[in-house]
Image (cartoon, rainbow, N blue to C red; front, side, top):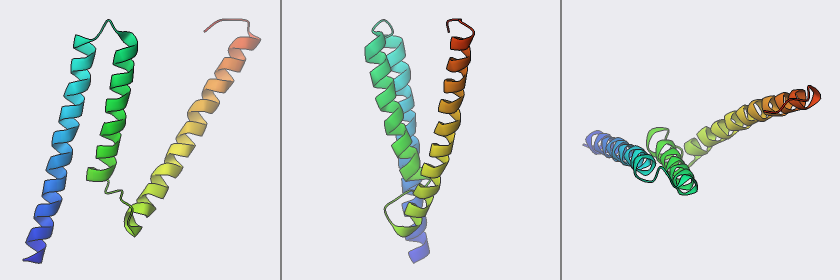
Length: 106
């Protein structure tokens, strides 16, 4: 009986995450379609919806929580994010420096 209640709790978490992800995605599409001319408002709203979707993905699908197992996953995700930021920002820095030395504009 305990396995069945655990399964239904996981299923409920996955369904909640799925529904919230679809709602956030549709809200972002609506923001672009309806508010397309208000560039700053759309950018802020889509950014906030993206952060909300990231939180839903981490909590519902990747099971990142404050418990022991979740913290280990969170440490791996944060380290991967740090490495990715170093690569992306380092590349942008090098390309900007290269453009400056060649006297071109980007």
